[in-house]
Amino acid sequence: MNPLDKYYPLIGKVVVEFQDLEFALNIMLTALLKEDPNVVMALAVTLPFAKKLDVVKSIAPFKIRDVPLLDQLDGLIQKMTEAEECRNRIVHAAWIRSTAVDEVFYHKPRTSRKHGMKNGGIRRCSVVEVETVVTSIQGAKTHLFRFCALLEERNVIQTRMFGAINGKNMGNSQAGGTRHQ
View 1 (cartoon, rainbow, N blue to C red):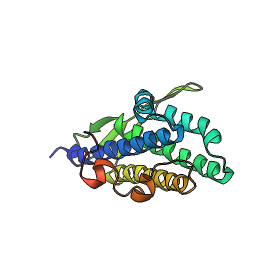
View 2 (view 1 turned 90 degrees about the vertical axis):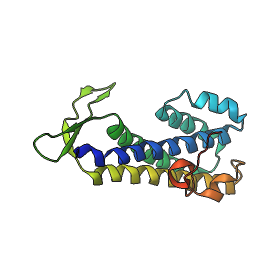
View 3 (view 1 turned 60 degrees about the vertical axis):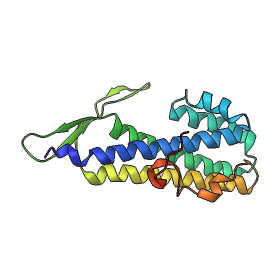
View 4 (view 1 turned 30 degrees about the horizontal axis):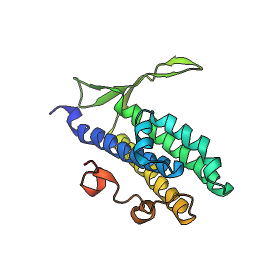
């Protein structure tokens, strides 16, 4: 058996869970802007996840007048940023199986504008590490739903889906259905 075989379903789960998080972020953005959902989605799908977070952070003070809610939003954005970083570490890595032992390694170099290329090194990976990434993404999604449910309660956004679902039945990964028509 290829040692990577047990990782494939987990990597897929990372992808699907993150797509659910991003889809919910798109809905939040649409609700905050109070514009035609088709127009907002047409713009949102062209933006990387981090840029969507920048947009939410930039428009929030104009749409959310409650300072404690804005403080909560800062914490939420941090959780979603961490979830994205974890996802990127897993999804964009080069996966390497050891031929000598039944171990799996991955390599994910990093870059930044300020520091340039950083070698992430080759790291041993465990199933638990990838499961932790899934849990991180699910946690960010739950926080997003709870925050949006608060926005609904306070009539900042006019949707009624976040309070009703509260992150439990969002998208393909948990409901087993599809959200595309």
